[in-house]
Image 1: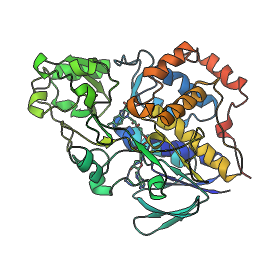
Image 2: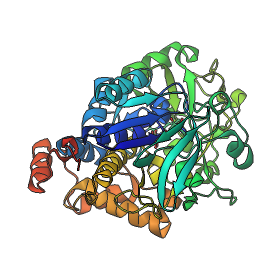
Image 3: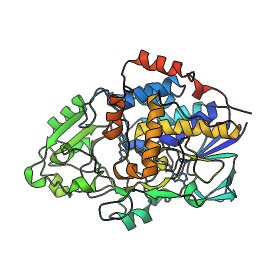
Image 4: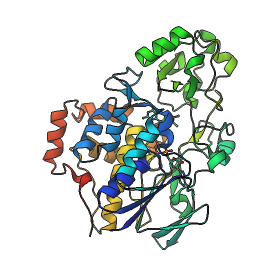
Amino acid sequence: MARVIVVGGGLSGCGAAIAARKAGHEVTLLERTDMVAGAAVRAGDTGGNGCFTAQHELRFLGGGELFDALASIKLHDNVAFPDVSIHGYIYNTGLVEPTIRRVVEKVGVKVLLESRMTNVVKEGSQIKAVKVEDGRLVEGEVFVDCTGTRGGVAICNKYGKGCVMCLFRCVSFGDRVSIVEKAGGKESFRYQPDGKPGRIGGGIFLFKDTLAADLKARIEEEGLVRIPLPKHLIDYSHHQILSGNRSNDFLENIVMTDIGPVAKCSAIGPMKLDKLRQVPGLENAQVEDPRSPRWNHVSDIGIAERDNSLKVKGFANLFCAGEKSGQTSVDGAIITGYLAGHNAARNAAGADPLELPTSLAIGDYMAFATEKLRTGEALKVGCRLSRGEYWERMQEIGLFTDDVGKIKSRVEKTGLAGILSRKVTD
Ligand SMILES: Cc1cc2nc3c(=O)[nH]c(=O)nc-3n(C[C@H](O)[C@H](O)[C@H](O)COP(=O)(O)OP(=O)(O)OC[C@H]3O[C@@H](n4cnc5c(N)ncnc54)[C@H](O)[C@@H]3O)c2cc1C
């Protein structure tokens, strides 16, 4: 049994830790804050379009725990998001953290909260240990970097509009620090239109009780509501500022979803509070404290150079997942988390890494996303199972299906059914 050390307790880190643990290893998960789940505490929508097929494939491959956990706190089903046509659902973000934490602890992962990694110890291409801010040294045989790409304060001050004390809470718990960066690995960045590194988050969250009563009732009933923006508030220049691949729907309307404790306004871009209150139904709107509706945080900083098995280039025993591996979504974080954790376990056991065949949607997607990252294209518009180029490709080549029986037999044909639940020890 080897010691696998996962740094970062977002969905990718939780997935990696579960997979490495199920493969039979002793797993320690270090998280900087007092909660796991990371960005997922204010995400909410998942499972739409190509994610449906991928989520089920992962289940049949033996890695269903986290998607089952999200489904168990489903708040709204079959939500018609602007750029997702079928099967999208919203989980209750207010319940996601304890729900996920219980799953991780149940499989026997040792979770160390308020344990911010600040440095690494390495010998040549081998990572030997990570150093925690309070002086502890955590040694292991294999490491997985799941530290995400968002914040901290210094980055948001330098490349954004300054810290607004967003959900990452760097002011309280310290800035994000990654293993890859500290070990001297190669990283890449997305760029803003003005050439500054990173991408600026465009979503804000409103206290539901500050919405007009009829709007609050509608959003809780329907899950998603589009509020047309008064003409003088529409600003198409936000298109460029936002992720660049969002439809005009987001610029001409407030696309508001009920994610449980708060109402989420996706890709809204910068809008001062007094302007926001000119939108019908938002006359008393208050943004979830302490964030402001101007900008929140800078993301897409420090994506690791890695291969298709999620092994970080230049290192013998370092893997990465989630945003660190170039995936910006709930589904992408969970899928890459499981694959990285499983491959970390295989690495510890001296086995070849698992690369899923392209007859599976996940295998084809991973190969596609890796190539897009290599050419730099993924840094321009991202790469997701639920929208854009990959979603089109998936339909064209027949990999999308919502027939669960067909997904099951497709996985069985590869001979890999249940592989993510099997022990991999030497
Ligand atoms: C506000 C918001 C809304 C979103 N909405 C959606 C959505 O609706 N649907 C969707 O599919 N995607 C959404 N996304 C994207 C999606 O949530 C993320 O891409 C995904 O959850 C990222 O997971 P991750 O594990 O890669 O990173 P993160 O969730 O960022 O987790 C990284 C973790 O690493 C920890 N960490 C960092 N440095 C250290 C260190 N040195 N030591 C220890 N721990 C460290 C951090 O504290 C954090 O918990 C949203 C993102 C945000 C921010």
